[in-house]
Length: 180
Image (tube, rainbow, N blue to C red):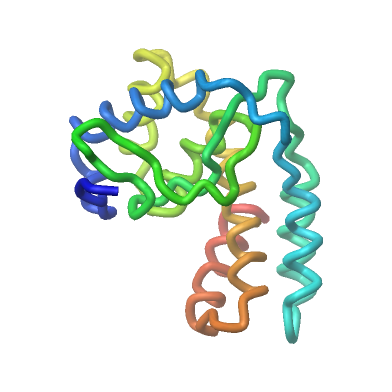
């Protein structure tokens, strides 16, 4: 795809946040895929592949994932919105649809916030841009979805034999801080 791939620094620009929120609203208005997000199923698969598991950290992740329920309202979601999967052509397009399915739209926002470790002000700006200046009431749901994403990300990273021990450890520390 021709265009310019984003990088995490693009998320520091207010105009880019508004552009991203608009693109997300378009994405979330697409017809549903017919396949619902299954965080528990994904977690079980990841856990099976973890060598030398940290049982306490796995338990924390599974507990976090178990407590989050899918809402009644689901929509088409990307579920892997990291900066490198966003491309400007000049409108924003999303790449790498491997994890796309019907999910809570706030999960896509949480992925962006948590994966890039955006600060509270940036997270609230994204919520306000997405919810047309009414984002504050969605903040608790964003935090819940950030925890879900973080738990899944750690399990995924820990299950990959090519992951560095340092990266797994650092992410594990974030899980303990955020989800415990």
